Each structure stands twice: as C-alpha cells, then as structure tokens.
Length: 114
Image 1 (cartoon, rainbow, N blue to C red):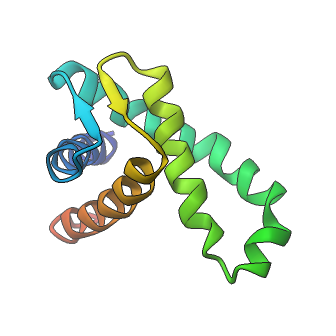
Image 2: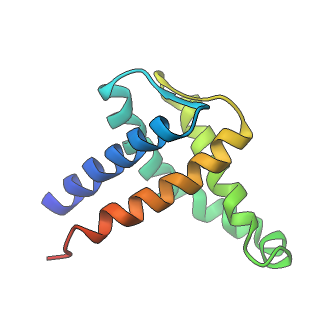
C-alpha cells in the first residue's frame, strides 16, 4: 500500500513538473494535480490497453509510434475529466505525454521496489 501511495505522489510531482515545462498544460492547484494523477493512472490502467488493442494494426504499421499519439490522447482525456487540469490542444498533450513519461521514469529510478 505504501508503494502505491508513493507512486501516486511521484506521478503527481511528474505531472506538476510537466505542467511547468509545457506551456499548453495548466494545473490550478495541488488538489487538481493529485486528482489528475489518480485519474491518469486509472485511465492508463483500464482504457489505454483497450485503445491499444483496437489500434493494433495502425500501431504495427507505424512501428509503435502511434502509441505516442494514444498517450497524448489519454492525457487530453484526463483534462476533460478533471476540473483544474487543462491541456490546450493536441500538441500540448503529445509533448506533455512525452515529458511526463521521461520525468516519471527519472523519478522512479530513485525509488526502490522493496
């Protein structure tokens, strides 16, 4: 359970840093950041695998690069669900998902799996 809460906190920090780096992503406070990180985790766990399965032929055709578009669309979907978390357009979502992935990866290096 502690690991789950720690991951949630790290994802919230990564989302806040992404909003700081990417001009088209805005978070109005700490509560929307926590809620957006939670909703993004649920969307990535439930909806994203289904979307990847349905777009598998396109994903194979583009050698997996279409997954980047799917990640951006998931981030944009969360902005539609969470008040106080706004993504201004597709390109902000696309580059935001890239930056979010890199920041999350770097932050997860500092956390042990124990």
